[in-house]
Image (cartoon, rainbow, N blue to C red):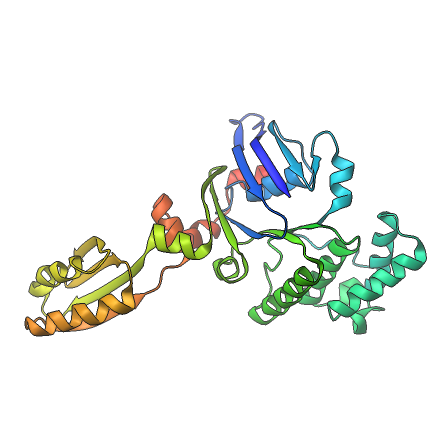
Length: 329
């Protein structure tokens, strides 16, 4: 469904240096996949989506999207894809149903078919009671569901979602995703999304692509990335600080133990399986008379993956704007 080779985008910096937003991206996405693209602000996520949706032209490289070349056949690409950007796509002074009907006619449906398709999407996304209301009167969650409907009005094979749930409260985020996943299953769509919500990528995506500094630095399932790149984490605090080195020796013997650190009375390490390792370490510590004041086992997160790959937290990086992302926007 998507195939890129050497996809590159540079932005001239004017008086400043050139911003290399995307650097030689090679990416393959099969039909039917749900792929999440993760990375901090300025990593090149939105720039990549904008190239794949033909909104901006690449500086170099090639990309085929839904069977067509983005540079040579942009009109064909646009007819075959749906795109939900970061901002609201509907006119604030228009009624929700009217916006969907107009979108349908833009994609070549006659008025009758456009109204039928609009009514169908309103029902599927629980928007029917809002059909006659102005977009400006809708809540944030309702507007985002309308945006999704606008992206789906022409029944695309491929849907791009650029941070679709940003700014929504947890209830509205869950509600939006429930609708998206239901529609995806019904229409067998390929979905590509960018998001700053790591739990979204972890729970929803079948595959996670991690981008940093315009390059792909990891590409696998969330479970595989967490297992191979991060691992479970153990944190133990010795009741007597002088016992911490001996406690660290026990932790180091746990299966898959690595990165064992002693910080005062606290011992931290990565292990293959925290639920198995922690009871074994505590039992051995008790047998040796080493008192443990606190013991914790943590399952890895996608933020742990990013931290392992880059030495930085994705949560912290994602919260800060960057010049590169502002230029890309």
